[in-house]
Length: 146
Image 1: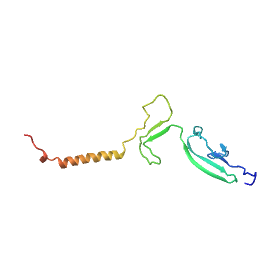
Image 2: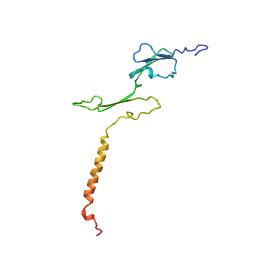
Image 3: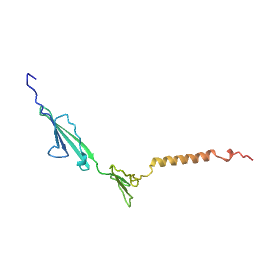
Image 4: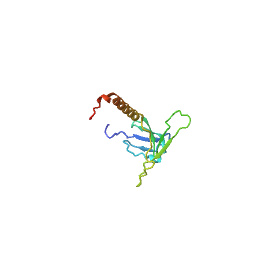
């Protein structure tokens, strides 16, 4: 900078939501803001950030994100892209994070089946117990007190 000449600060940051043609915010960097997701519908969205340097060069960054303000939906009995036939029992539960003074026990948890690894552990334990009993407990080991 020579003398009283100063570079003009033309930097700015514009924020777009999804494919909106107009920004929902325009700021001078550095930017600190709170994104209120209660005004955005649930689903997949993207935040597009367009920043302009003081020399006029633009940079773009797109950040995909998902909003889920509604209740959590849990489904037991059907997975994504699963091939099914005949009749399939399905359990659906929906619960949110609303704060209230009452706690409803019924329906607050989603029932799930016992995992396969637990069944394998139980079967292994029972099989080892049977093996041990048949191998080491023979009539020769019994001593009579009479």
